[in-house]
Amino acid sequence: MKSNVAFVADFERSRAAVLRVEKMLRERGECVEALPMKLRPDESVRHEWRDEGDIHVKRRIEVKHRKVDFTDDFPFDTIIVDQCYNVERGYPPLEGYYVVNAALTHYIYITASTRKFWFRKSRFIPEQNRVCECFEVPKELGIWGVF
Image 1 (cartoon, rainbow, N blue to C red):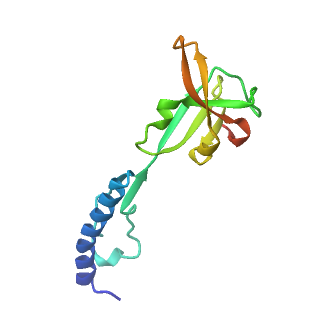
Image 2: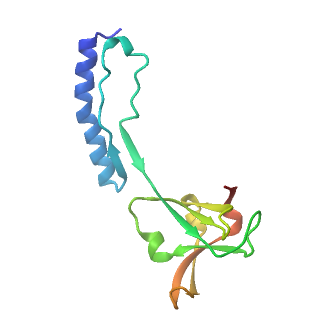
Image 3: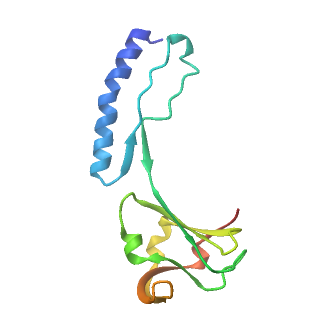
């Protein structure tokens, strides 16, 4: 078993490695946060002491409340994800979109992993009184859920 002195020395030295990895991930365009490092109070709690990890990676989830009634099926063949310029913002990286029905009882989750199947379409958006470039996705690629 490692001595407490050796453990503390390793713990303090590891901070430089955590910060180095955080910097590398940021340079790659990731949205990350190195968490504060908390040393256990003393050696007696070494088996019970847990931190929450070294680095957390953040992803963006967008939520769209649609004026559409749906429960188990969507009334159209495709789902409007969002305007293209909103989707193409890159930071933090997109995780997915929750499209919520008018009654706030059901949702469809569109994961960013389906992005290669999204397509552009020009649509008139009444709330904006103009034509907008939007991404749409076949409804079969959504993950359906109930609140």
